[in-house]
Image (tube, rainbow, N blue to C red):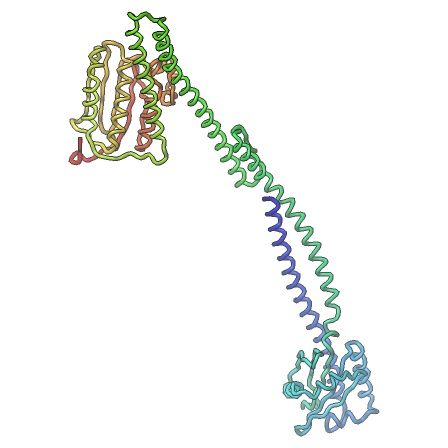
Length: 484
């Protein structure tokens, strides 16, 4: 990943540097061409001024006087410009519509001489006679020429023009050296930028590399890894914090998974061992025939216990599926509580438990999954019966608070120790002093909690001075829609 990012960054740097270098070179090139053409314009204006100061009726008349001191100075200036730029310099006259010209200076480039008769020069002369200075780039066969021209004035009239023409190589000379320096500077900038970006990216990606290593460790089953939350940008620190939170939760889930497997193994082993021992004892004759009915009853009880455990595990597994959703309907929760009491009447009578139903209203319609809620009611009632001593009391209550139905199951049993209150909804929790101590599998309250979570409601243990009380909530419904 680091190599790919670096390659992409370096590619961007290189492309950016090349682009900026190209723009820079083109800008310098245009500036140099403009500066040299400006210089040629200045030289042409000087020659034009000197030619305009010659005496005569026309420009050509003044140019015939070769002994004139000014004409001699014009040739000196022209020779200097010609040598400096390898230029071809022409003073052109326009007289009665006829164009005549004469060259000055030392250089008479054949390509330049030929170009002076080109139609483009005639058109340029018209512009110059109108008082305009010109500069242009022309192609003459394989030769590329730069031409500048300025008007020549005698008195107040424009009588001709001064043209200075040179090959493009003369104007553009030296640009290759500049291009070389630009390329060298661009290379140096690219290397330095690459080094800086490499160090910067490596520093920024180092926390990500550690996250990658930690993720690989998690994939191997090591959930104890942690990463530094104090290094890197704020986003990386936030990501590291979230990663550490995830690993802690995964570690907790792994611990729960191991405890779950250990508890299931223990709960399954206990009844199986009893069944196996009693069966082998009767088969081997160790248990007398007269006592075998008693042990057969124990085998049946252990089988029932084993079956109940398996049913609870299957129920919890179904409830914890991601696609598990309640099948909502409207029913009277008070009627469900009455029926639950009728179902457990034999158990209540057997322990001489006093049962009472305290409902705020005769009907309390709710909207929920009736089968699941009935399972919650039965579990809570069974727990209350198990842990309420003989002659004790169980109370079922219902009421509505702020549009939410509250159902409470109270008993006068031994209660739950303060240190166990936060664990009673954990799977297989059967602490000695807990409400489920010594009886059941410890899955009943876990199932109740999961069912209420599915409904978006809650179940909790209330603070009581005597016994235990569990309360769960449900969404209320209109009484006219009650079905039961």
